[in-house]
Amino acid sequence: MSKLQIIDLWVKVEDKVILKGVNLEMNTGEMHVIMGPNGTGKSTLASTIMGHYKYQVIQGQILLDGEDVLQMSVDERSRKGLFLAMQYPAEITGVTNSDFIKTAMETRLEENEHISLFKFIKSLETATKELKMNSNLPHRYVNVGFSGGEKKRNEILQMKMLKPKFAVLDEIDSGLDVDALRIVGENVNDMKSDSFGALVITHYERLLDYIKPDFVHVLMGGKIVKSGKNELVEKIDRDGYDWLKLELGMVDEEPIRTVTSLGTCAVNPNNKVK
Ligand code: ADP
Ligand code: MG
Image 1 (spheres, rainbow, N blue to C red):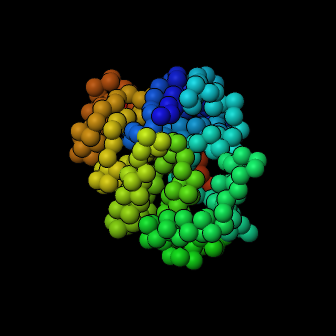
Image 2 (cartoon, rainbow, N blue to C red):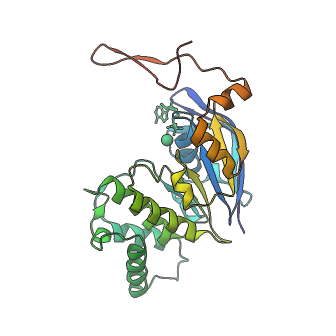
Image 3 (tube, rainbow, N blue to C red):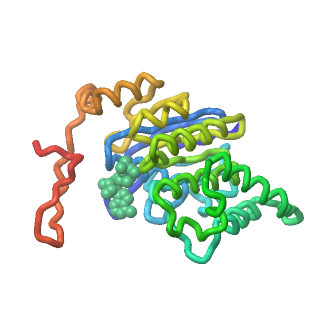
């Protein structure tokens, strides 16, 4: 069993402090869900776990089985068993999906080990079928010309092949139709085991028909303000977040106004004008 600990994590992005003391602990064998209004820092948390250079940790720790994740490079984090399915997957021209996955798998091996090409192709075919993906997708350039739904499935394909200890899935459900949602959800849920756990960031209850959460957390104002079980998802789906803001005595932040290139004034819709 493995353990991922996030301890009093403070993160800033371009001089704005986004995360203000996030605490979260998870073990393999557990499915954790993070919900929260737009712009509260869910993707910031995901990117920080994986080590995106733009997200600067100003305080706190991330530990994987007691090891300091924040000292590790991105590829070291991946080799140690962390995986991020991104909200907006990147396109990589010139590298086929299968080469990309195989290379990533090879970096996990000891010097004298190698992956049998036959076994690799078989397991890639199986994973592609389980995700009901078009069989040519593994042989195309990573995400280039893929539809939104295909990109999301492709993230899960990579996850199935790499078999991480902990996967952070950032809005893996956005842009999926109902059938794709079921397929992705079932594939993620099937991975749950003593050696796999996931942190699932989502807005919708629908995905959770397939991925059964053991713990549900709400991220608001840069912190996890409430944790619970499925009933929390149902309540948020029904009532939104205002009741929680009231319960916690949270005040909406000042609206962030930005003058657009057209000279109009855009107000961040997450922040209500007082
Ligand atoms: P969520 O995923 O919960 O919707 P994000 O983590 O994407 O929220 O964003 C939290 C806040 O941080 C937002 O105000 C967003 O504009 C800002 N932010 C996130 N990433 C960046 C970035 N790369 N550059 C500038 N601001 C960012
Ligand atoms: Mg996000």
